[in-house]
Image (cartoon, rainbow, N blue to C red; front, side):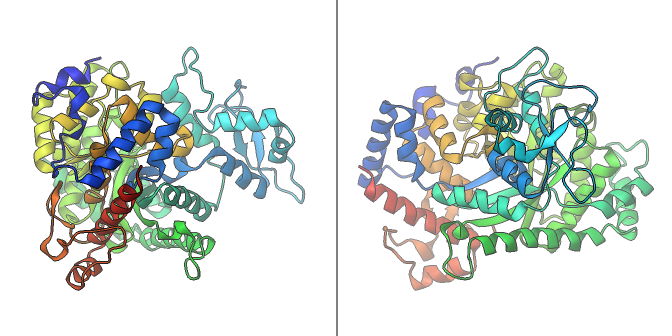
Length: 537
């Protein structure tokens, strides 16, 4: 692979070892920041556990790339399955006739009847509570824990196989949201932007009925897709808008009840949450268009749904075959719904996964046609055509990269100097750390901060800048606290007063914060940094 350290020279004189604090620009470190930086370096010399302990309480702003289903730890799935009376089978869901070895257990529903009776080849989930080996095998099946590649099955295959194995569970998403919010609160986060796919039965049924015309291309796609949109809306697609909004609301209400948000709220209740509508890119194009249209409609109608994203393996046959068509769909729909935000998985690829031509254009198309304001993963950027120009474009447009270090490692085998992380930073492309699927990967956001420090040599100032970047590029409502995009050295005039650990915003600043969710969270992040740095030793 092309080493990221070789690419840095194309964008400036920085060396990898000293490059971490180049971007975004900031004022010289204050005395309290220097104190925190020295404590950080001392912890770093002690190793990962010491550094984790230091970074766990560091303010982290937001996690902007998180799939709800993948964020849940296997132990929660097992507990939910016990409550729901599920069974466990030891064959893969897609090929039930073929037994599979260790690490392929999955949930199946019991047979209908008064008592729990499992299908042939399955056992009650309660057996796992009496059999440690079965319990361990379930955790390994639902995650990357203890995974060792075998001939024909790599980390990518194990990672994406986990989702089908626990997909039989129902009705637990409020508890799942509580779990991720509780974990976020324990790590001094403030905001989660969570991807989830609600029901789209009417949209899919309408898509099956209407289909897509053959021969959609670069010259006719807007007219062709406009006609399909009109037909989908006339055939019941909007019925899913209210259903999906209700589904998101029910998840939030369940979480609020669990966290006693209307009474003496638990810390998790103070974690702000918005949703990104997941579109499943691996399905037939008529389904993808209908679901994407539904996502734009839901995000337009529901302020809690702040945008959309395309998910499923980017290297899949359908995903690769239809990638350009899907970007044309986004280009057309962005023209109809210009206020809806888009973040896209793009460049979640590495050499050898697909032919070289498959690495040449996904990130660029996601930005130029898909109108992506953020890119998830972005691993193959240096293999795209004209990578220097692409990085410059991303910097100029302030397109942020959601950096998932562990996910890129376990799925793609990309780590260390094979990561484009240093190249993004050297090119002044905004970056922020995120978890992707923290339950499947058995991590949390603090783990990613540790990995950035140890593997990518990011210093304290660099980590602080990425925490600020996460809120700057979140799809939050309202204005930024900062005067200029990604410049964290000058706040807006209304809020220029020094922010100390016990500060409260001035009356003038309060007016700005009251009407701007983004600025409100950013001001609070600065206060939290002031408190953290004052306590650092």
